Amino acid sequence: MRGLLVVNPNATTTTPRAREVLIGALAHQVDLETVTTDHRGHAAELGAKARREGIDVVIALGGDGTANETINGMLSAGPPGPDLPIFGIVPGGSANVLCRTLGFSPDPIEATGALISSLRDRNFKTISLGRANDRWFTCNAGLGMDAEIVAAMEKARAAGKTASPTRYFVTTVRQFFATDRKHPNQVVLRPGQDPVHGVYLSIVQNCSPWTYLGVLPVNPNPQASFDEDLDLWALRRMRFVSGLRFGRRMLMSSKVESSNGALMLHDEKKFTIYCHRPTALQVDGEGLGEVTEIRFTSHRRALRVVVSQSEDSANSAT
Image 1: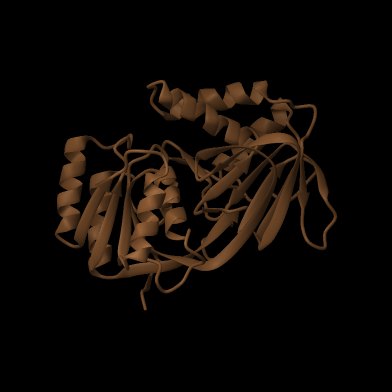
Image 2: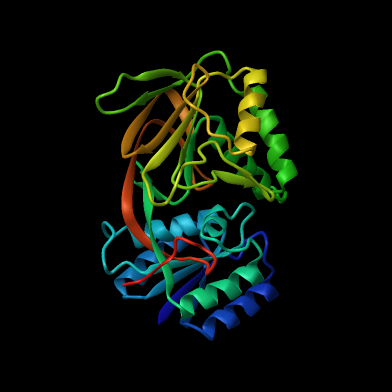
């Protein structure tokens, strides 16, 4: 099996020495080429190159952003097809949502051991992907305060600060009170349905949970699944008390029906969100700037991924 390992040297949970150990272990299982990224967009270039060259498996060593960029590169030449490499991940970020959802430990050493076992046993699964306009995503996307928090955290990391759960919590509280909570900005549009006005923030999930606060899953849409289409949680009320109530439900992974305070959509093939003013967008934890209209689509059975042996829904590659 020919493999490409895409290494993010800025991965927050691995050291250079640890990465050497992980690379050596993977090289015993895969005929491995290792490339360390050195500029923005480099992972996408490597993903595209791997598909052109017929690489069997592409592994990203980094966080959800590194995985997202690599996969977008793999898909840049066209829609999913038999020439698309299998994708694997070794966790190196702060949340590692994709890695955990595929059944792997957030610890890089433990995850690498499990990944090697799954590669040896061909423990693969084909999952759906979401798309936000032209950007593919594996786990989540967000418009509004969610994306503003991501942008604030990226700014903090650029200043040399760690992306700790405490910093995420403090940043979330700060952004909540800084957000315009009197003038909703977003409109949800679905084919054949009346527009839903009065939306402050939108969270789109392709899997469950949406993210993690340390070891704690944060889950607005607990029914979201790689085996189905997209779920949407749209907040229509931004009062402090309602914010606490919805926050508690997300941390408890409680199913919430649509109400005056929130719009809940499950297993949606496509929808569009229009913004009255430029609004921050994030996909898989990476800020993409501001948009005024974004079209979300779901694509079933789009990508084969390596899953942990403990993942009950794993299936063998064909």
